[in-house]
Length: 21
Image 1 (cartoon, rainbow, N blue to C red):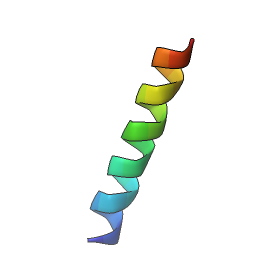
Image 2: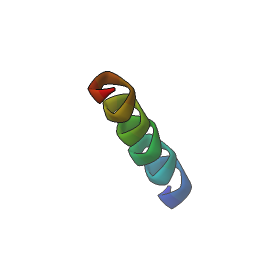
Image 3: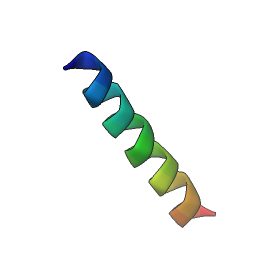
């Protein structure tokens, strides 16, 4: 459960970073 949420959070953060670039 926690692992899945962590991956989702990381993916979301990475996505935002790419879009912001």
